[in-house]
Length: 211
Image 1: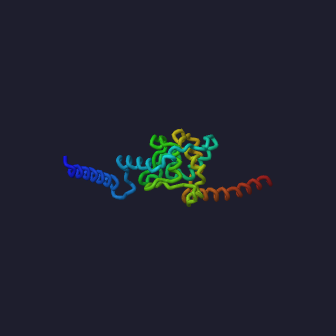
Image 2 (image 1 turned 45 degrees about the vertical axis):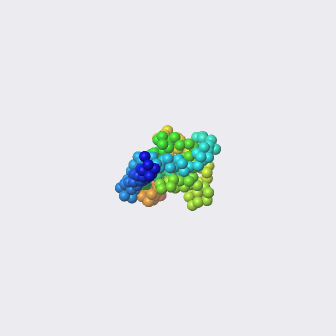
Image 3 (image 1 turned 120 degrees about the vertical axis):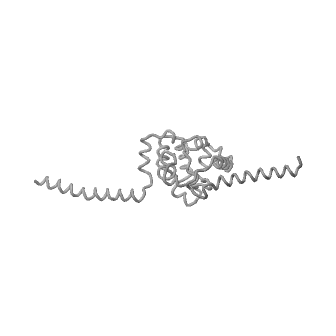
């Protein structure tokens, strides 16, 4: 086969791959409601793996796991991460379902098979072209809310625990989830009701004692 013919065939193959990739990415237009195709998911995961520096992938967690560390990370996750990932890490939340791609189920193998270093790097640096922001402690605007690199390492321990999260732990986390306007309004109404009822109860009690 002539060299020119081989080059044409190679070019056609690359063109076909490019067309397939474009069709995969642009399916359903630019809607965030769409679900990534298997090809897009495969390419994205491998691209993410290659984007994480090797030394970062091999990093060991310097924070020793303990019940205290788990408790701290659990409440941190509830306050900062659960709004997209859910308290149990399944990603089935109003915000998570509106993202493209959707947040992964952190309990499944695709996440649990990542090294501690990879999880830490993703938390600190985010993932480009997704809804995952960078929570790096290197002075960006998110750091003041998130905390230090130590907090990210603690979250790695908690992510490992997610497949074994108990009902009691999940209930505790719900008390630390960010509250929306409706929740705050409901709490305010309850507080006002209790504040109004308390003086009345005290007055009735004092009146009863006088009699």
